[in-house]
Image (cartoon, rainbow, N blue to C red; front, top):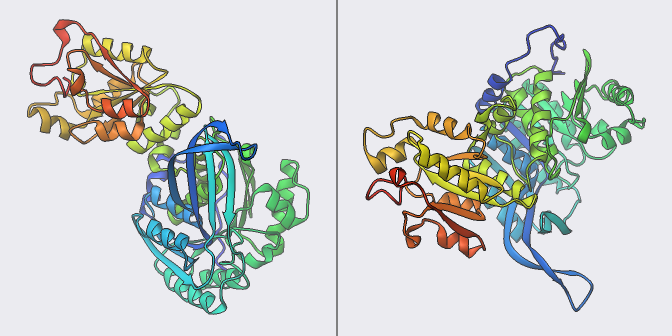
Length: 496
């Protein structure tokens, strides 16, 4: 059997692994995912009244989002880390199956094999959400095993795909794809091809995954499968060791929610405390951890390092709102010392996710933008007054290429990294987000700030994004600055 054998756990006095370098290796991997895919629909809105027909809230729908869920969410997280992914699953010949095919196929670096079974119902989960809280979840699904002929086709494709990938991940949600002897045959195929195999199990019969290199149950699944108590760390280790011995697993990684993770392998056990700063939404954290573990083992990282990164990714995931993914930049930011101002410099995706978290807390989000090339007194007054008008201030910063395009050489005087670092060092700035476009309008639309801050030197009708912000109930604030620090003539709409 192709067991994964990790090295011994490092002693406290030994050099710790360079986790940042380990994170960067995740993007240079390839992983096969086999499992149950589902469609997650999120319907967002506001509740301001109760129905006269029944004592239930009325949701005034604002927007709807559809995302791949289940094993599809594992794929989303792998692609977010930059890993190339092969994905094999089964959908029905219905609208949800068609939507999933488009969503999966539209992701970068994914080779999808979504097999269609006629007459089968694709799993669909619909969530109604207001003020960051779920009002209702409605599920439509079929959990019968997939057709035997389809199972044989799935196995043939998986065995071919294993040869082109480094690690196979089985994401079992109990919806029929990994039923019968399919898991056992995939484990055997991985052994024959010399590939590692990780399982996110379902149910209490772990014999179906016997011989897997790593199984990743949660605490409740561990208790059911081992038929042992798991109320203490020692009990968790004993139950996990029992499963290793009974089913020939190389390692058991137990996800423990707010208590982090526990790794049990041939060398002993290690506990990894939870690394979440804030918990907003726990949905999808297991998928994130599974994807990170798969990519880390594909990068040939030692198992304790891989588990540590998976634990870190799970902590980041629960700090996001909704079914968000964890990216390389998220992991690197989490590894940056807490006191470093560089943590404030984020991508557009990260800025949007952070804005959702701030809104969830009821905080007003402000936005301003500019070149900020050689900061002066006017810039500082603008930033301080802008921050006084909101609870959190996001500053949009033009990239070097955008500045050269708009102002010409020799601009910018300072490169974007230096300009961003200086902005991030100000206490009144909560986030810095670079943008490549000539106009900040797309960034404003994505962030949906409550307050848009500009200078009074710009005519109200020329304030970019003003109509957008007013359209969703926000306001535009124009600030007076000293005459000596106004934008150059002809450049007012760009900001100096």
